[in-house]
Image (cartoon, rainbow, N blue to C red; front, side, top):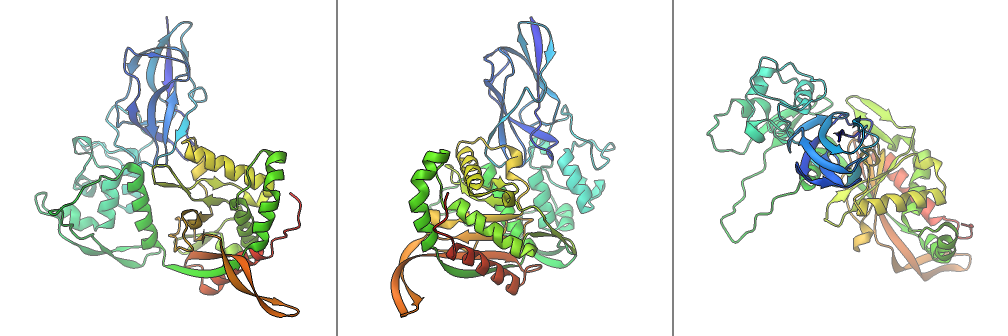
Length: 442
């Protein structure tokens, strides 16, 4: 008999550790090759780790809730043949989309290098917590005063976020037995400006109510949305576009397109193409704010918001969309959308976006006011395409005709995108859609 180590796989360039969520197999269980053994999680996705061999699980090296560095053995499988070590490449993980808060590691984990010296403390802190503490300037003495909600009272990512957002000193010095009271404090935003922070009011739960706990993904989305509204002063502009030409073109080519490329062409790649063209005309929309600096992205990576069967939201990213033609965009859009619905996205496929597109028309909505996907500076919502009477200017005079009309709404960060830039960019997107060449070949 031989023993094979199951390795914590690499989940993306920026991911250095992952948390063990659930062991699908227990010690003594027989395992088939490529059968899922454990579910792990980063702060973006849940991922199933399959077995690289056929055999019996003889040892589990980390418990559920432990955070482990990539490349570390997490279990041992006994099988026929010589002893080998399964590489991270062999233990390739198939992503199971579900945003997740980082769980708390136990003391037997092997985390990445700590960012804060906690050697003098009897309390265990995860690398993520220590990194957040260092970034916020939280000393060990202050960290020790934070109440932890994790296993054995350990401080979690959520504890840190709540502590930072609700007023650091007020929470650290408050008596442990005191009932939570509404607070109003001021904390510095990322550009140094003091911003008031309000704690949510207490909810009356004494009536005929049902309490539904948020899943991990919903918690992360909620935190991200609140953070975005806190960080960026949102402005939303609207235009209405006559998209009759592109609707007629798609209706004409969707059959031949399917036959020639084995792909169904939707409106999404057409919208993405228009956004890419407009960003080339107005590159200062494709930016992010870093303190008092503006980061302008030269690559155009378009996030496309997609609703999951669970009702949650995920935003896979079309990398280098400016380098793809209509066929390439269609293939990429369909691939990302299909794998999002089937929980097969990789962590790096939901990172690195520079601009986001969301289609509220999918739900029959005519317009929306989307929240910016931080750290980006703008997000475009496209509404439902509806037939409406519209006035057309012709050489013979104005006429009323039935046209395919659609609202577009752009939310943008008013720190760096002013009304002129945001409005001009949005109008340019609409112009590209309205002037779509309906005679072009596929």
